[in-house]
Length: 340
Image (cartoon, rainbow, N blue to C red; front, side, top):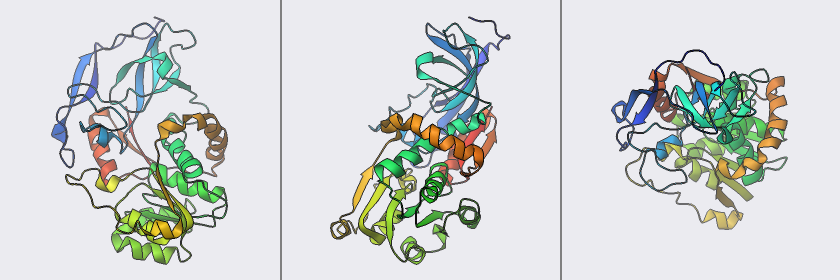
């Protein structure tokens, strides 16, 4: 290993103790001390600096079969992380380099070099590689442009629009020539943010009244694209307002993640026959071929301020579960990040 400062004997990591039923509870998790990880062949030791918490992690806390393997009980959880290399004997990676990887929820990680990506702290703040220039940004890019097949002139509706993904979808649509962009959010403050800072043409607080009525008022000419982060009544409302050949991209359904009984689906699916509409779910992992194009296009927009972003930063690994619960409650504006 290359020379590195003296390391502590232990590292802290979050483990899942019980699989949550309904809303996760703090006692479902434990922050434990473990011996300092020892990198094996082809691995580097990383001290994590920023950790990501995301809605999809709720699904991994269940034992149900899904697109990502469930978290194992009594084992460290995983998630996006950016950290600094403190020890390496891998060619091309040196102590002091910064890496993006997926062994989060812990202070130190022995990371397979082939499963990590170098990031440049001089090109953009490290935290952005977990958000606007990372997985959430690519999710917005792929979902809008590839899955939803966005075209110039489209009218676009985004739910969860003040979140990390939704805020990028709306801005990207405007930058690419949407004729109107509408967003929903869960507070008046977030609604103002969407219009005043992110440039949405209209926005509404879904808590103020029936979503269908508010969307109809905000989109008198209907919608061509719906980017769904919420599901439930938002999806039903979008189907009702869908124009001919409209497209719906299903990114998430945070409104039902903690339900203990199956949520009823939209009762107006027959309208898709009239509109020749299309609903398609997608996972960002299927679209990593877009990563180089995404970074080339989006990084200059972020650097110039043409594409804005917000982060909600929580300090300390001890507060990570509370940060995760905050995402499920909608406490965050933009990307929720834990800083170590």
